[in-house]
Length: 94
Image (cartoon, rainbow, N blue to C red):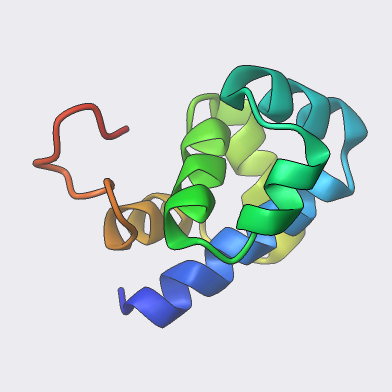
């Protein structure tokens, strides 16, 4: 997947979080970010990768995101691979 498409999917994932307050609060708690931090970092590919990591960490979350975004479930994972820290060979990724 091209990086531009991966970033678009990452932004879609961020928008998904923003429309689900419970998920957004959980993400903020797990990431250590606050709302202002997230707004400032929203366009950063590494942050988008972190959002995708959060969704990919739970099958129900990623399936709900994929359905809401009109994506195949594997597209979130392929997008994550295309963003910083997401290569299948990277330590600590996914």
